[in-house]
Length: 509
Image 1 (spheres, one colour):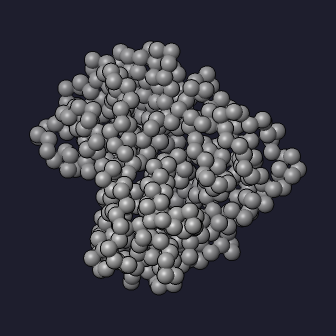
Image 2: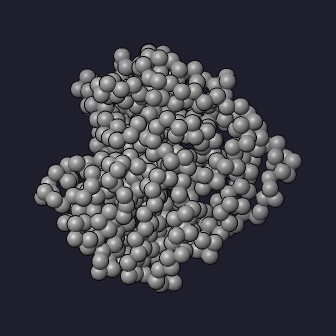
Image 3: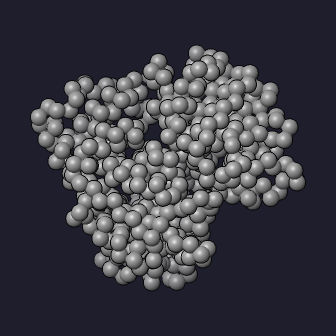
């Protein structure tokens, strides 16, 4: 996990170095820079794979191409196992991406299984930039004036470039010759048509398939040469990830660290402690006060580069949790994606989605939009403290398995709760009452949501929002006191950035 900056065309090295310095928090372990005619690559490294030998930019033996990358390529060992002896210069997973493209051309980006934003340059001046299909790893760009700039975060760009910054689309690659081409979708086309159920409910074969897919996804994301932990909210999704990871750690002769955050009376802390005791993890609690939540607000909005209330509510406790977890580990697993795969949100069980095909279509839509919402919050809050977050539920194989299930099985019919199939697949892995515990949004379960709602109402009522500017035409209408407050903070820090070109709002505030 790292921060990258890349430039192609009429490059200004001083500008590029300024941009790279602004994302240093993403990779505090090392800095790497390469300048060639017509291109510039910069890298801030968080050392996780091949800690001693993975300095970037990486190059081939003959130094004909160079690469920088942010993220993880989970199938890197399979990709490099096909290479002749003497080709590899490191054990870095990013080097696998370099050789894949060198041997297979730009289309070989589609063979990479992971979360990534990569940038390459060749000795003859050619360039390639690509972002993973789910958009787990962030990437923004600016083109025009004879140069094309890329960076991991909005904050990287100079003031004069801000009005032209756009989010680079997931599953896309850019080359100096062909421009932008889409190479993959967040949700594979073959699983988009909803399969109708032949039976009212599932059987043990289905439960085994789902459980095996989750276990395999967690196992892949424990790939690391440094410590791995789990953000444990006490909810179903992170609890399942923690239960699987704890078994994997135990098989390695290790004890899994888990981390939870909340106010003194929050339900999340109580539930997380019970899960940790059950799975035998080394548990860490971050107890926060209302004052601490209020004090962290401005920083949280600035860090996540967003002002949507749903994101900010969860970002504040996430940021406080990441700060403490980064003192113990460099990688954490999280539960993002399970609600989108298994219809965990309450709104998906309203009349609007009573038709199974409509429900399936909504799950696909929500997955395709996730890169600008929960994944943005998750990436920024962790990377601000040099901590890599990995999301097992967004594993490509698991996504295919979950979306191939009949959508009727994900509905709350017959009195069953949301995600009943997923819960039943892990019978015996958690205490029964926690396995079937009702869902709370992270910001609510941690206690932060209540604190922030009161704070926003007080500040807006007292006109204490930092001189809230007029909402520009490129921004959606602000929908609540919280959004007014958060927008004032965001607009102060990111003046000039177009919200409609870089951000996504939740459907409700």
